[in-house]
Length: 200
Image 1: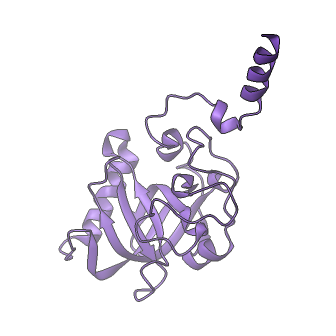
Image 2 (image 1 turned 90 degrees about the vertical axis):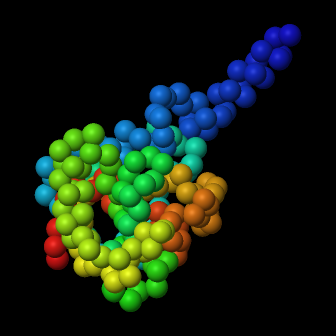
């Protein structure tokens, strides 16, 4: 009997930290996604090619629902690009923006930027209003693809969306898909939440 008890204890203790975590997050890393405490930080410039080519993925996977922000995620960035797709009816309420470096870049070489619900504060209300004015009158398909891309500058905190990481290895495939931004594992780097939307 004591052997069973010891083995059970050892088995529980040897589980990865993400398995042992207990949290009340309603969605994957929700507190980090809606965090406004970084909004006053002076943004650093970053480019979409830089994000896709040199921002190394952290060891965050789909199992890490409660991992707080760390490392690069504690930095606010200013990123210029072209809006290729805008979805305003996601199940979590976020506005999902897909940005590429150039107007004619391949659609999958994008990064995602997300603006949380307006109910979460004036910062997000203003960002959505500014984005709405920027794309006003532009034709979009049912899936949100803009007929003509729109130039924009986004300011917000970096966020690695490990929810779309299929496993725990360094070169995991992306699954489920991350919108159309599936060019590499580095494409799971987002600007989330977006604090400001500006004209370039």
